[in-house]
Length: 414
Ligand SMILES: Cc1cc2nc3c(=O)[nH]c(=O)nc-3n(C[C@H](O)[C@H](O)[C@H](O)COP(=O)(O)OP(=O)(O)OC[C@H]3O[C@@H](n4cnc5c(N)ncnc54)[C@H](O)[C@@H]3O)c2cc1C
Image 1 (tube, protein in one colour):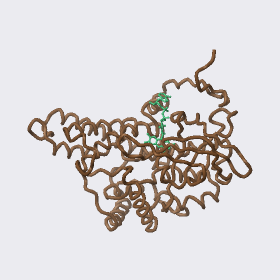
Image 2: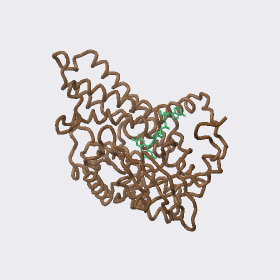
Image 3: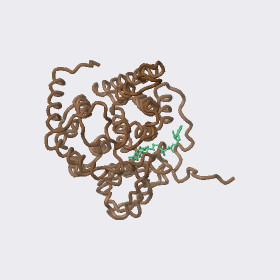
């Protein structure tokens, strides 16, 4: 891969910079982006919608989407350049990652023309926000084990069950849900995928309060929720295939999320911190640790470029995409922990009014376990790398081909 911009890319980058410079404030290089938190949600959502609307009106929304759906019909490289440049500005948090990164592409791939016309352009404009309703209390890594049911009733389907860890469901307008429509089929075969109006009667989102005090995701309960058949995405019983499109796009969205960032903030903190009466940067143990983080973050950066090169060649990113998250998420946790050590007793402070931007290390430390779980846990990613990159034997699957109804779920009688 050529690491320099081509003349066309350089021209695009300078247009992006000019537009961002005219419409947003540059971010202080040492400040971290503000994650969505419980306290600021309403204001942040309003800011995020205003920012997205501006981008849409002025031709900077959903760059890789076709123009007919509100995108700009540009390539992946332009989208990467946009992300790199927008990241240097103080813009609202991206509440559209799930909708734009995963759900829009799923509707474009599997939706009817009517569904595409009705939802995709609106999604790009961003006045409606979308959530992903896949995981359940007993179906996360093993998603195909989900138990929320949809039963046909005339022109509608009636949905009952519970989802969990649904990011943003408490402020979202629309969701994409996978349900079980045939418990007599093997578990991957009896699923059907729907678009659901989150304001429907019988939908209840209960935010889950996290250790950081934020409440970014929810339990969502469905009690006799009626969804019209026209909101079904794909054929009855093909929900797993449709869900795989969403999940493949999730891996790409996570993989292009800039794993390995944050090193320069950590270096800056080390320069400002004191250890044994001198700058922490003069301490050999600190230097050793920083060098380790630097090497790992460079490895992640170049592994990310490898995935990007594959996408630019038109290939589908392979299972090696799992490496970025399997290494990057634990490293973020280790870096946050090390930053807290550097801060000494101030490392315990989470309040931004007291600790300023350095408090984001505490927020990162408390949020990092979630990053190691969302989109594939550490163990599941290692399984993928073991089986599909290294070619080790696959896990034993005792439920393969069995009707879902017959898969044991609790203690077995003799
Ligand atoms: C911050 C965050 C945001 C999320 N957002 C969403 C969202 O918007 N929508 C949504 O639908 N879901 C969301 N999720 C849910 C996420 O997809 C699941 O948490 C994840 O897939 C893991 O599932 P689980 O929590 O049920 O854990 P489980 O699958 O029950 O795993 C429990 C433990 O068992 C281990 N394990 C499981 N299977 C294996 C195996 N085969 N081999 C070895 N070890 C195994 C896991 O690694 C883990 O340590 C989010 C999660 C987080 C943390």
